[in-house]
Image (cartoon, rainbow, N blue to C red; front, side, top):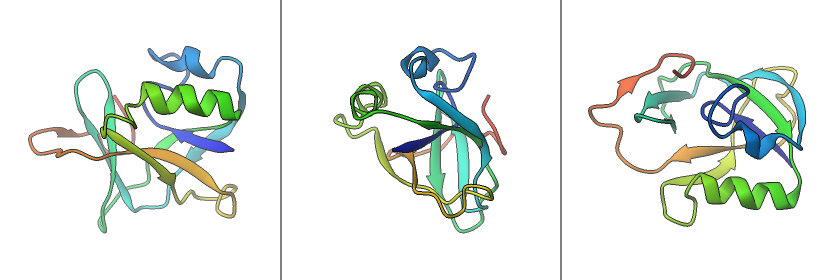
Length: 116
């Protein structure tokens, strides 16, 4: 399975160690249907009709790694949901998941195309 990461899981950030054994596929950019917000120590991605092209990285991950990533992202706690994301070429025909923020972004800073 492949995942798109846009924040604390990227190279050089706090949670990247969770991807250390996984395969980096490449840099990627989303279709313009998303916004990314600064939630403090990490970002939150939401989908919106007037979105931007968000920059990130794509990794191919094992099922075991996916479980660790879902735990780290708070999926069971209802903070994020992992689901498909639309990327620009060369990933436009590839199934790639990302973690979407499920809570309000009211009062949070819009990060533009990348975080931080």
